[in-house]
Amino acid sequence: MQEIVPFSTIIYRDSLFCINYNYMIDKIIQLSKTLPSVGKSNSGGWQSESTAERSDLMSQIITEVDYRMNYVYEQYGIGKPKLNNYWINVNPKNTFNFSHNHPHSYFSAVLYIKTPKDSGSISFERPDMLNDYIVPSIIKPNNSVLFKVTPQAGMLLIFPSFLKHSVDINLSDEERISIAFNYN
Image 1 (cartoon, rainbow, N blue to C red):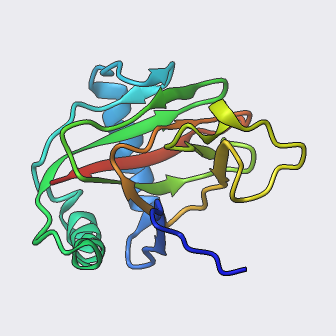
Image 2: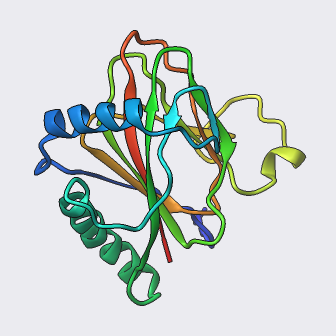
C-alpha cells in the first residue's frame, strides 16, 4: 500500500562547531549572576530579557543561526527570515521548562551551549489531535504523542513556532545552558 504524507512537521538539527563554548559559558554565567531573571516558561533557573541586539557576545552565533534559518525559509518558500528576538536560559539542578510555544513568529530555534549528562531532554508535542481519537496499543513514530531530543553542546534545533515543547527537569549537578531564538 502506498503511503501519502500530506502534512508533516519538520524539526531541523545541525551543529555549530565554530563557537567558543567555554567563553560563552563564562560570559553567560556572569550575566545570570548580575541580571534579574524573566519568568516565562521556566520553573526555576534564569532567563534573560529577550532582545534582537547583535551584541559582541551574540553576533557570531546570530550569523550562524541566520544562515541555517535561511535554508529553512527557502524550503518553505517564505522569503527571508528576520530575527524577532532571542534570550538565554540557565537551568541548574531541579529546574525545567513548562510546555509552551512561541506565538508571533514563524520558526524558533534553540542552541545548546552546555548540556551535562541528565540535564534534560526537549520534548516536542504532537501538533494534531490524533491521540484524542486513537489509543494505540503499541507506540510507533506515526502515533506517538511526544518526540524527545537529548541535547548536546553545539546542537541547534529549528522548528515551527507553533510546535509545543517542554524541557525535562535537570537532574545534573551542573547547569544546562541554551539560547532560544524566534524568527519571522
